[in-house]
Amino acid sequence: MNDDPYFSSIGDFVDNSPAYKLICTSMRELLPNKKNWFGFVLCLCVGAVLAYIVGCAENTVALAAQTCDILFGVQLSIFACIFAVYSILLAFLSDSYIKKLLNIDYGGGSSYFKTSTRYFESVLFMYFVAIILSLILKLFLSCMPYDYILTQSDLANSIMAIALLLIYYTFSLRVIYELKSTIYNTVLLFRASLAYKILSFVEENKKSEEKNDDDSD
Image (cartoon, rainbow, N blue to C red; front, top):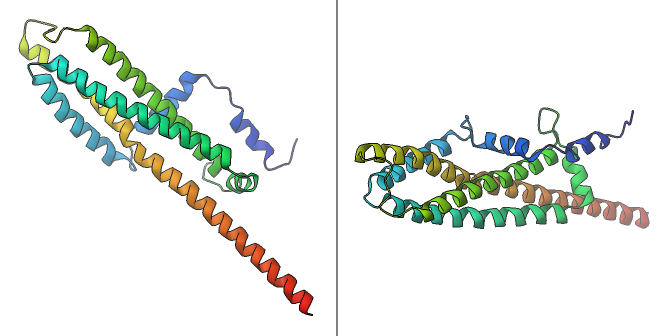
């Protein structure tokens, strides 16, 4: 059995779990808990207002298509930015900094480096699902005439439209709201990197002073 403290971390990054499992894991980030209940409630309230306005309008299909197009564009742009940040972080992390992050216990036997990388992976899959959902909705709406109705009852049409749009708007807004946590985690990584560099400068300065003292003696 290998006693190397870093050997146990290899299995965390060579996991070949199928994509659907990673997607299910990413969806758990959206579930309300003590830390993100405010974001969930906010997105639910805003989604409810939007769903009511669009669902009760005379041109529901046209308004739904416009809002879906806006959300699709925002989600696609944020996905590109997060993917770029994720790639840059992994490309420019030094070996010594990665070693330091692997030694930081984040709780539950998980290192800070593993937790951070898994979070970014979850966010990428989260936005992938949101983009696919928006794309499918855009395709359906583009095929519908603006005066399309499901039933002859205006009340039934409004209720069904509000219910479906409420789910879509709440989910889409919650995914976008997750950008706050993504920025926070990115800032923490950069701060930790700067702190590690400053610490290395302090150690180099101490070694230089000790060497100068030895030379003076």
